[in-house]
Structure formats: C-alpha cells, structure tokens
Length: 343
Ligand code: PEP
Ligand code: MN
Image 1: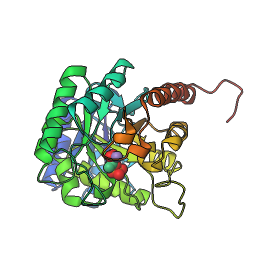
Image 2 (image 1 turned 180 degrees about the vertical axis):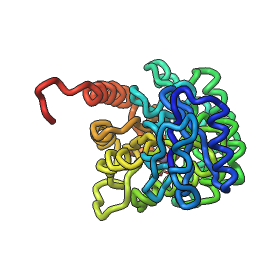
Image 3 (image 1 turned 30 degrees about the horizontal axis):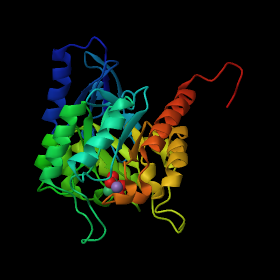
Image 4 (image 1 turned 135 degrees about the vertical axis):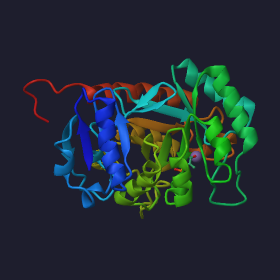
C-alpha cells in the first residue's frame, strides 16, 4: 500500500505510522519529494487493513498497490520520479542526454569525445570500463585503468559519469567512480548484481534485456528498489526480433507503455537498438516523440578505429545534430496542446 501523508504531517505522526508497520513486520520506505511525503509498504495489505491506518493522525489517504511489482508501480509513488545525476534531473522537464563512446579506450579518445560533449553544454558522459562482450576474444574494457580515466575526465570537464558494472566482484570500484551505474541488457536478470545495485548509493540505469517483456523488466527494477535504492532509470535498448536489417529492434511503444505502469523515468538507447549509424538519429527522435525522458547515445571521433561498437557510433557533428533536434522535438512534445486542438 501507499500511505499518503498530509503535507503538514509531523515527524512524530510519521513515526507512529512507521512503528505500527514495523511492529507488524512490514518493511517500508519513506519518500519525501517537494510535493508530497509518502510511505510505501509493499505487500502490507495482507497483514494490515487500510482502515487501521487511515484514521491515524497525519495520514491523508491509503492507496492499495494492485500491481505485482509493488515499488516500481505507478501506484507506489505520489508522482513521477525524477532521478538526479550530478545535478541533471532525469524524468523532469528537461530531456536528459548521455553521450559518449561505447568503451574507454585511451585518455586521448575519451578526452576528445568529452570535449565536444562539454562544449555543446552536455552534462553527462557515458563510457564503459568493463565491457560485456558476446565474444570472449573481443575487447573487454580497460577495467580499473578505465575507471581512473573516467575520474580524470570528470575532473577536467565537470561531466557526470555513467558507466557499467558487469559483476558483483568489481561493483565497489565502479560505484566509487560512477555518478550513475549502468546495468547492461545481458545482466538485466542477474539478480545478485541487481541486489548489489540496490544497495549502492548511486542512481542506476537499468537496460532492458534483449528478450525481456515489460513485466520482466519491471520485476528487475523491483530487485533494485527492494534493497532501498529509489533512483532507478529504465532504458529501452532494442529487443531481438526476426527483423534482420538492424542489430536489434527498437521497441518504441514500450516507452509510453512503461510510463503508464511505472513512476520511474524511461530512456531510449538508439545506438544498441539499431547497431547502424544511419538509423541512430531517426530512432533516437522516435524515442523522444514516444515520450522518452532521455537518450543514451554512442559517439566517437574515429568510429572506424573504435575497439567496440564503431558501426553505431555517431560522428561528432551528427551527435551534435541529434542533440539539437532531440531537444527541439522534446520542446514540442512538452508544449501544452493549443486550445481547440484535440490530439
Ligand atoms: C553499452 O551500453 O555499451 C552496452 C553494452 O549496452 P547493452 O547492455 O544495451 O548491450
Ligand atoms: Mn556499446
């Protein structure tokens, strides 16, 4: 259940509700946003009836959470979640754009990309130090050396760093370096990794598995949320279909479908969704048109020399064009519908 507190509820009144829940053995989380104070207690309705809580001082309303993913469900929050990554609000009024190379390859490569992203007003940089590759013979990332290059690039350009954790063993090092930890598509159902991400102090970018249904994806988010980390952003990155003109198929409709079911922000990664540079801009724009809260895009100064995912990396000028077009489109999407026009 979701317990919505009165805006003027006192600490003592919140404490009374929490004590009752805890005495009944119910785990819960308190959410304080500028608009509302609420308590989410998944599975509480079995042990405690809402009419036991509703009359308590400071309680405005008790809303049952009917969906099976209790914490990710739209019913579990008083509004949409905005995830703050080093001052950038993902899920807020601005479109969040995270650009960068697939992997950290060298200081020169990383700094060159960071420079044009920062010069264009970009605030967040992506690059993997640990790369989950289909082939064990492919470039696996620079590991710890990659993380220290990421720390150096952040210090130089004041960019927030989004980077992937691929295993529990190296999670601590990734967590220390990252401003947002990415869980990759292949690890979407690595439950030990999801739980570790749930105990981490940094926001989590959770990619959709290539064969995962929307429900499976939301259950994966539930693992992270269940450990107490409320800062989860979902990222659609293409699914496997029989279509063979592209690496994956961007599931555009999952963006509004996910946003209807969950309070979490939803981003789109048109790079892994297509695997083809020429499809990245149209598919990125399609994601924005479908209501995505942000884009995750691969870009490289010399894609022909990239150690991973070169064919999908946008050249700097194309990257900057996508940023401009995506922001313009997002403004159109956000604008109120003119009076008299029914869409
Ligand atoms: C990546 O972002 O570089 C990556 C490996 O993505 P995915 O997990 O979506 O394949
Ligand atoms: Mn990649």
